[in-house]
Image 1 (cartoon, rainbow, N blue to C red):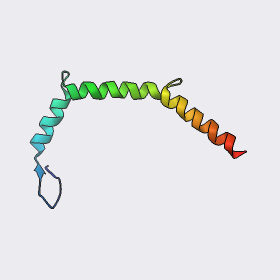
Image 2 (image 1 turned 135 degrees about the vertical axis):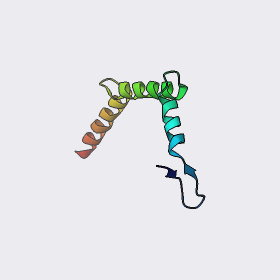
Image 3 (image 1 turned 60 degrees about the vertical axis):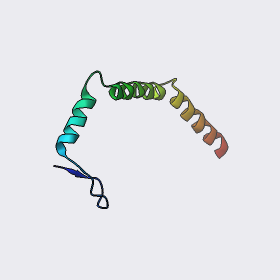
Length: 69
């Protein structure tokens, strides 16, 4: 199964190339994988109670609620 990027330039990515890329990303020493794991952890912390996104959303909701009255 191959992937055609677009009809105009007829770029085709062969299934073997896709498989090779996925396997490379799955390697423990892959730098991209490490960065994704780090960002995932930071995102998870931001959404937990006391995290930056959690706090910002709370402030936004409080602001909206106070302006409804």
